[in-house]
Amino acid sequence: MKLLNRSAITLLAKAPFAQWIATLPEGDELNQPTSLEELRREGNIYLISEVEQESDFIKVLSVQWDDLWTNELAAWDEFEDYWPENRSLKGFQEWFDITYQVMAFDVSPEPLLVATLD
Image 1 (cartoon, helix red, strand yellow):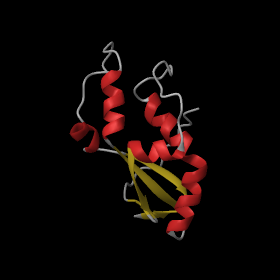
Image 2 (cartoon, rainbow, N blue to C red):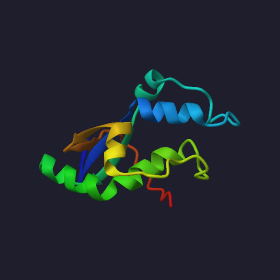
Image 3 (cartoon, rainbow, N blue to C red):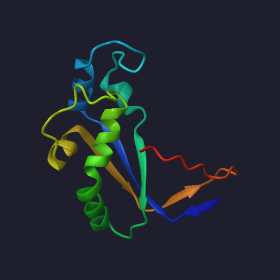
Image 4 (tube, helix red, strand yellow):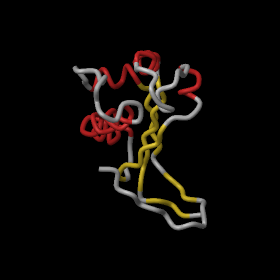
């Protein structure tokens, strides 16, 4: 087991995100109808620089919220055709439950694979 020099932010969908997904055209496997319950079974975890206290998470979130939201939206609409126009930190917080993890551990014996998603 290895302690990573990272903290984490976890996002779980709220109703507005599920409602937005429901408005997307059904054209491929990604845009199939899904319920809020299905979306909340598994959220996304974002590793961030290591922090020591909750106020540090607030600082990170105030800078990174748009990157996180962009990634969540792109998973459903990669060409930005149906993205909400007026995104804000407040709107982000209305679309996602956000939890914070100070420490992150790697229990896998496999080396970490790093793939840039730009």
